[in-house]
Length: 289
Length: 227
Image (tube, rainbow over all chains, first blue to last red; front, side, top):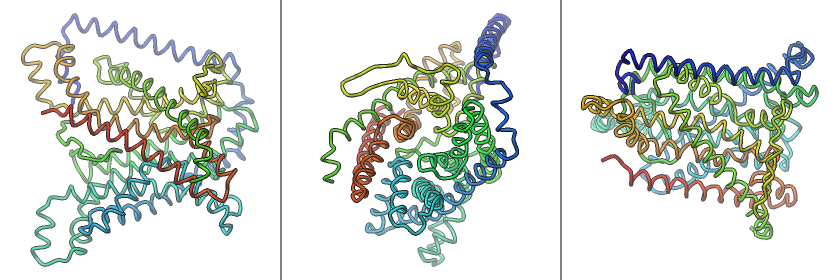
């Protein structure tokens, strides 16, 4: 709802009151910021020694190449697998055959409800025992990718299902009427139209995947969080390293969000973005944003 | 299943930690999220801007980084939470626990704010217009017309946020709270050969918890549905 609808254009009295509110709010926000800055200053967090590691080419390279690049790589690998997983199970959930529908439903519900970390550590032990890929970091890398694939795949399965269901019913009916088969209707008519609706949701899911790659920390998978840990453990500059790590994540995720919004405007227009709740069931579609 | 049953009390204690994290952080994030949402939709531009910045920053940071900040970086500037030392039965709520709760709260608050804001957005424009047309002031519009409907509309997104938070409590297990994830890791280390059973048991408990929450929210949603 546009904020302007909630209240009238303020009159002279209200304008004065709002000015006072604004002044008080600004002062208290400034006070909080000043307090934080003072605290940082008092504990010597602005000292150059603390920041030096983060300005040294060697560590910048470690943060960007071993950290950010690996993190992005993990996120995008798992999103690509997750899209495949999501298409298979999302379409499976729409199947007319109960023996396909129910297993797909169970798989999707299971992987949506189990925390990513549990799956990550489980896969990690599995590959460790299986040997093969367990040599050092490869096993950890693929454990993160596998855990993120099944989790995001399950979420995307719901997105695909909702997207296909959002295509007007006449489309499928018309396709059947001209004699198409079920697979043709799905692959030629429904999915191409659904992708348009789903794309913003898929990109938003990339943000979730990217944030969750940080959990590779728990199994020592090389990524931004793990590289950050070794830097702050070495130099005892937790504040500074966490600041830089957070900044990198925020910049990348914010860019992804902008892309998602742009795609939304480009492909879907003013309609509400496709939202798939944790809970399932219909979401209210009557909105005026 | 034997391993899990033999260690039933340890597993129960671990889920006790998980649930206590969930409840404490859930209540706190509910309170702060509501305040933040009020700032976000209110008429004071500075507060609205500040809330928007907070939400953007926190939403784009991984939870792990947020908790690492309070767990490892906080103590460097004197944020130690050492005054927290409560024991409830076997639950020992110390400063590590407090740091994790604060991290979870700071993170979830941003999502609660967005869920509530989407609830306000879901209210039909005509409702607010009609309320203003009959002469209600801003407080009246909000209290009598918009908020009651917004609360109902925000039940599903709020439930989503809190269910995600329940799963997010596992991150605290990485950083020193002995909750479900940490316990599962410990058991897997001790009984490596039954790791699959252990995983399945812990995963199923989480599935049950999530299903209970989503069932409750579906019931609430149905009861409160706007006619």
